[in-house]
Length: 133
Image (spheres, rainbow, N blue to C red):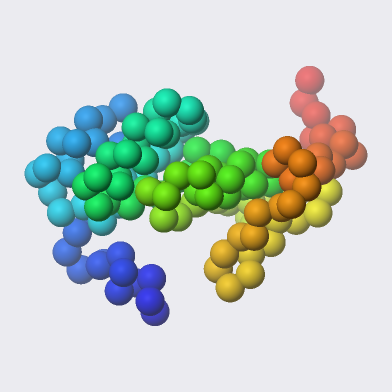
């Protein structure tokens, strides 16, 4: 599989960098990728992207993976920041992704929606069904 060769699953490491000095890890270990979890947006993602691009380390982003809206947002982030190699999501495991039409992959890639905003519609019925308070 091409992705296994690219990621080098023998030597090399992938590490979550939230709250860590990512440059310290990059200098001391042969990292394949830095995994960015928790909500990281704006200036923080800009810094991570610059660091990854400069050091040749990929970013894997899993900061908004629990809904269809988050999945689309991550795809927009990946399109905007060239350092992002992969986005990680769990939407396919959930009962409902909370969007009108699923944001589907084709040949392991997303095509960004051409509609305004994020490009997907919020499923109001699903929101009502899963409302807790």
